[in-house]
Amino acid sequence: MLHFFYKYPHRFYLSSTMYENILKKYDCITTETIKDFLKKQFDLKKSKISVEKITEYLLIVTIRFKEENKQRKFKELTVKNNELFPPWKIFPNYLEQYISWDQGVQYDYCVKNWLPFWRNLSEKQKNDYRIKYECSNDWKNWLDENNNVL
Image (tube, rainbow, N blue to C red):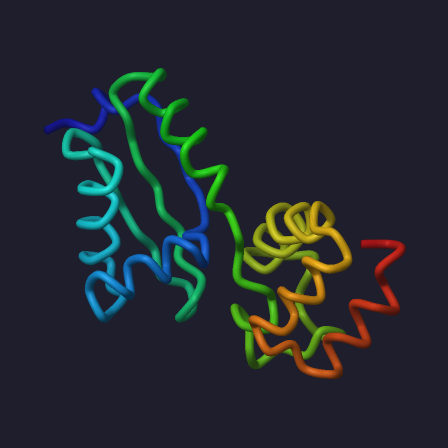
């Protein structure tokens, strides 16, 4: 099928919720298991799906829809399950001071996606999130020190 029939793309980072659900169902995370999960879970059999793996936990998914209303419905469904992996899990070899917050995929993920997610959490949710994702003391201190500007 030709791509020009799929006029309505939706690009997103695979949420930790989706990641965990795929892992439960397939016991592994591959581009094929992600595509299969999305097609079955969201009835996307007639959509084109591509997956780009950046790191173990950072996967960019693009779904191309033929119809704008299907794209919109998918976005609405996925907004509810949008817990993102934290930067310390996505980019484990970067210290928070040295992370490239101003360039490339690090900027897009951290600044445009993760920070808005983080800002919407209550203090209790932030604390629970840090525990869930085993936030190091260095990251915890950095987040606490920069809480007013994040």
